[in-house]
Image (tube, rainbow, N blue to C red; front, side, top):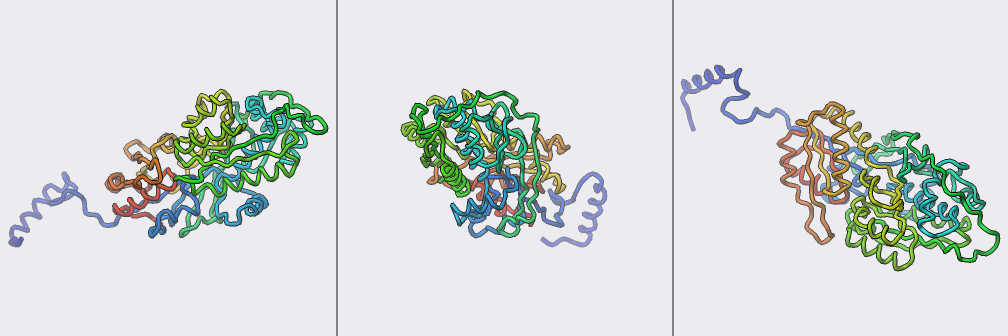
Length: 449
């Protein structure tokens, strides 16, 4: 529409009159001179070299993404041993924790002089505290066969042992950086968390010395360990390093003479990143006479199957559960984990975000105990650091219950984040979180590289 010069002058005069009372004239929003850019952050479920493939043609979106994961600086010798099992390994997420979960289970059974799960459980915390320090399974097993109390230290347990609740008292976290579509190991930073004084000081039952000669099988041997790892489902991208570590541990334990005079038996099993799949696997393990179950991969899956495992009187020992709620879960002393709880990871993750100077932060989490639990911890840590509630936006999404389910639809959430003006977006999820990142880009959120 055309207007006269006089009308335009009058309009400008009106704008000048109300300039102090309004942010603009003739528009509902201030004029944007530059597009808002947001830094992208992730966690252990998506900070993997295999994750960009989940984004397909938009794999470039991970360039510049940062995140944290429970990780100690892994010795090159350990990586080489893992690659001897699986030469295709590109990630090592939870490999140390998986190896140690299997090793600790075997050492506890040897000290207990029995494969009875209750007897093994009473030794597990003690295996990691006090006693004679040993750092490889062959040496530790030799000591345990003589009934010697030991203090096991290895790739994931370096500073302190387990708490009374059966989880690490201390942890190491790595801050990872995507350069292009690969994590740049040269930029990885490690930070410690937790307190050594939190480690248990309780004296375990005295270890039983193994009799010389053939076992009489009254001990229940051989020890049978069942896997409950994410071969399929949204966490399957973390399976290769965990599977390789479990296989390596069994191989090295048996090469050192096994447990109670027999080789340890491993029965593979899938948790499917699904309660339905995991429960079926647990039922199969119970039927097969498994003593210890290594898994599940996800915290929410473990919470679902824990009652079944406890009712059967078996041990559930996870290398990757981080939900704080599992610390106090009703487990009758049969649940353990080598992964540290999210109360420790939340602090490390908040620190990474704050160091970049972010001021308006969106935290997106998969709707389960892992996602919402870590989301709450990070929020609390950010608020402690001075980020007010109005500068935080919390959103969740429903992860697919089965591979055949439709993919995550996060378009509405992405629009909310754009309107919020977030300069940082933390995505807590597994493989399915790629759909969240795609939705952010499609909504016009410019991801900073």
